[in-house]
Image 1 (cartoon, rainbow, N blue to C red):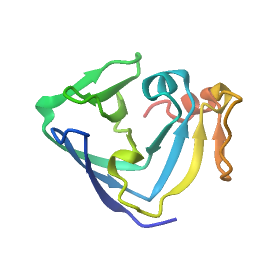
Image 2 (cartoon, rainbow, N blue to C red):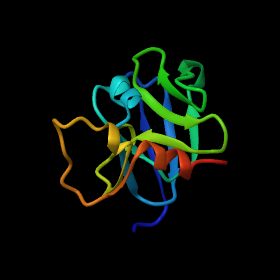
Image 3 (spheres, rainbow, N blue to C red):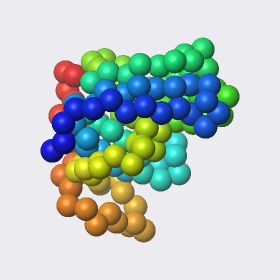
Length: 140
């Protein structure tokens, strides 16, 4: 497990920049239908985010995608910026947004029960069903 770090990135057009403080250099894949619809495939995201600082917030659009979570994107170019729970402080930030060649550790897959059969990752990961995810985040 790698140490905490700060990763930086910006959307495609540069209107929004993020500084993401991650507790460790791990990432996970979400296979839920909403994530796959949102991005055209599984969401590969930093999951141990401790803090997100945003510059250009006037260019951020927040979409309430469910009763418990919301997704943000740049209103100018459409780049996905984050997924966050409405309660608590959980953010998932797409790794491609802040990746500058870090040695990420891909260690978790969630909503594995919604993953389509046409792709499979080779990494050894902790795999959680949707029900297990909801149980883990109760009270967050």
